[in-house]
Length: 269
Picture (cartoon, one colour):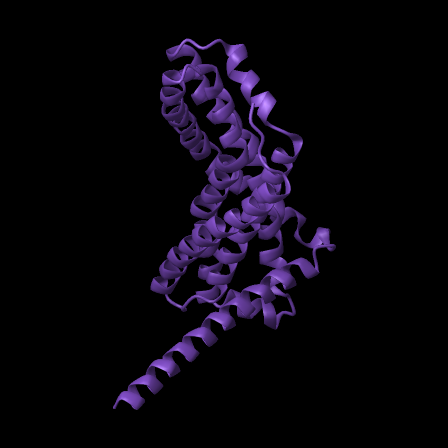
């Protein structure tokens, strides 16, 4: 019995590992196939414009509503400690550096995945259960080139464009608490950030946002194209795509941040 139990456990582990590798392979195929015909811009440009407009429309207001209180909360937490240490003027630097390096790409990615990615998954999943994807293949139209490629570029582009919006809104929330409430001068608030930030910080942030938008689009399209052909299957695909995107974004963010800090150690005032 013990030998049989170990054999069953081993079989389950092997099948589970094989299933995960199959999914990773399918995701990689969709991603590479989506990029393969990127040069044929005329075939997907207007779909790209429509997807950019849709993503910008559903994420712009939420990103403002998230960033304003987030910047104020960070300023509140850091400001109290800085005030006890007699360094209230350093709060602005801590707030803006945190926004630029970590908060901005993460906030844009999570909103792209939550608001835009879920809509992508449900749209492609609905096409899947209506056999539209199969009909496109019958008509010699590659559904990945027609549907996935514009969504990849749209999600990445809008994620990058949301970064300045997050930074400005978060800095505004921190400015209100630090300058209006605590009485720190505006010059001191912005001076700390200017002395701490470097150009590479912004470049890495934009790169992160682009990668995160790409991940959100890939997960959304993959789960939509492989969902069960039923309304329940579409709902499960939306849930899975959002959860998996969040996990991947946090993992990739850790790896990129670690590599960046090893290459360019942060400096103090």
